[in-house]
Image (cartoon, rainbow, N blue to C red; front, side, top):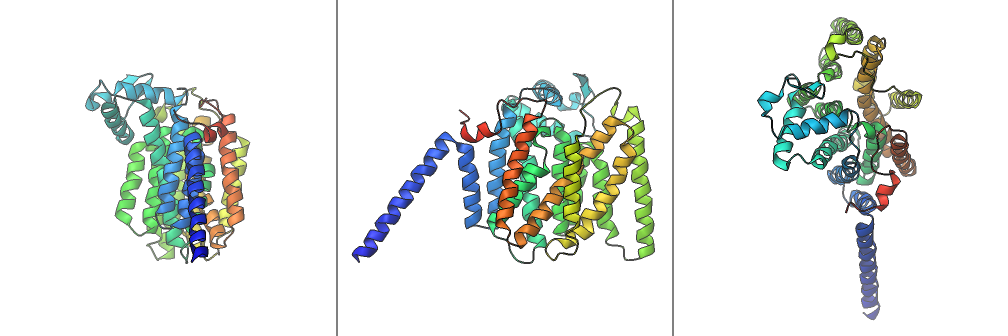
Length: 396
């Protein structure tokens, strides 16, 4: 009896000491605390817990960093328009040119969201940064969790799903563009949700999210078309019809890409320069595509590789080829490879998870954080400090 009481007493001290350590970490390094807490929660619980925990972590971390970003590039006019929406009725806002940019009626989703946030929060820029961040990284967490549930034969432990979310969020999404190409990033978020719903055979909501992506940024019509086309082709059994449709759609995409690359009237490209695609990006994407495609015959993720990933990569690449003659058009069209990147990283990580490769996934997660750090170091934008500093700093 005495030994039992002593054992309980020891456990009480261990619990109190652990809470004291976690409490001090929370006070002095809340980001590090949330990372530890997210992984711990995912270890204890499966289901939606990893998605919620990881989405909260990335919203806090990346939302905080984006809030400290010095307004520059596209983010400067996004914030200017955000402030402007306090004083302009939304029906008068569309079509007006401010800072050389006008909102289109064909792209209302983001602008309506920004208008609602502007009038309800007195146009606090931090709110816009956090909401945009939450939508983007929340969609990644939702996609990875949904894909894990739909593809893997056995239910994966929550910690494996959490590590897959970390890899997809850090390697799949280019963090430095989340407050630069804002609407395109949101369009990708909606397309990820659409693909996840399609895997769950919820076709109407999937179609609605794909349309929402197009209404966020019209250039998303191409990846949305490819996604919907691939889904519809699966429903047609006649091989002659299928081949004819694929051929027609491929030619249409190639022509559409060429049209984008040669017409200055669509996005008024002119001499605008939004940067260039680095060699590292091409190498990374090639490695991800090859790695994910090699999983074609695996039991865990082969179904999605065969039915979506390889056809999407093949067809969308035609658009990129068509747009390659115009540098800015190539940049805009290649940007949607980020969707391929997220899906590819997710497939690779879930295959590793199905094979219980915990150490490899952990290393990839660390590499993912290092990749974000490299991106920030080489970005033309300033985020108020180094990436590592945010892990050991307090918001206030």
